[in-house]
Image (cartoon, rainbow, N blue to C red; front, side):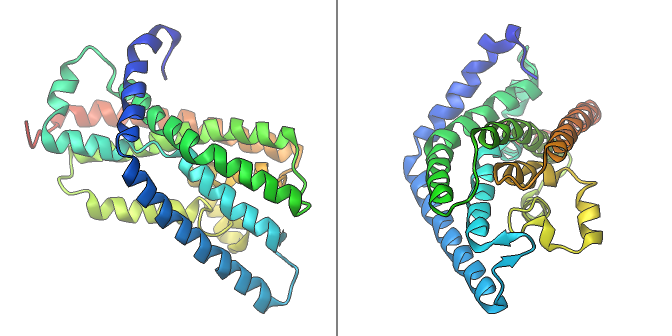
Length: 272
């Protein structure tokens, strides 16, 4: 993690990452158009499901609540996205990592700082406006939403960002050993979307599958903060869920250090 002592050193990487995103506004616009189309398709998909079922409530969700779930899970995914795995892979491929490793800086902290630049950009450009729109929709749809829920959601999102970072960081370190990560990255991305509840709320899966999801970190990335925002968790469930997020942060940060110590010894530079 970045301490106060390191703040002045590593904040430069956060600022540079943020400015890099600003330089590619057109790419962001194209990306948003694509994501909005996906959200529209998802909206009509769930509308069709509710209409064909003839039920007003499915697995504890009304249609309006499902719309909020889809929006918040999407916004949470954008909020927590650090993109460090692709950055690590790029550095390994072009050989620039050899120079970066010679710097008297922690590679993990530098990646975290760069990831936070992406987080800040997504929050300002996408998330904050989406949250405002979703909040307005919730009130208009008579969905209960309190300031406490929003604050706890933001706290959970902070934990989610750190979990997402270490997941991407560990995955990125695999590029030290694997020359071609594209196929694996697509598989791992699909698994994350499915097991995190981004595509389908976890309560829609069989009980035995939900038990498996509880043993993995993906649920803590998207599903936990989304359910907190929607008020679907009781007080003790919120405390337990936040505690599980903290535990995963500790586990993944420890695993990242072990991965680094092992892989850095046999690092092969492809470019440079």
